[in-house]
Image (cartoon, rainbow, N blue to C red; front, top):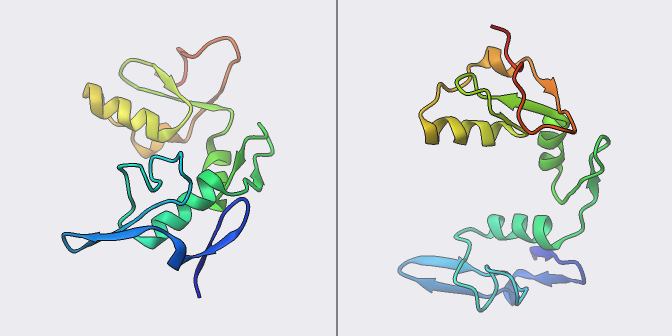
Amino acid sequence: MSSIFLPAAIIPISNHNYQKSSNTIQFKCTEKNCPYGPSGLKFFKKEIFLQNHMKNIHGEKKFQCSKCEQKFGLEFQIKYHEKYCGQQLCCATCMKCYDKPTSLLMHCKRLGHRLPDDESFKFRKPKSESSTECTNCFER
């Protein structure tokens, strides 16, 4: 039988709230204050998404970054985080800097700026404590 990890206990899938509406099964979180919980409007369409949610949001955060000590619930998240921890990625158009590649990509898409190519992601300047914007992330 499949089960989902919760901070306090292991609960079989059959105890999770799920409803079928318009040919879609809705998987709900068991935490009552969660937006994906029984009284929340949000839901998951697949059981695996609910399982990841339970591990990531409500489960034990057992993976810790060796640089900043931030904790994560899933192993792939710590691997992604450590790849960019302590570095800034800068927009080639306006030179605004971000901590995560996804933030930089969203910035470029929203403002119509040139998307970074693979070459621009190879050089990253260490994050400075005093400034959220850097002016020398790219060589010109």
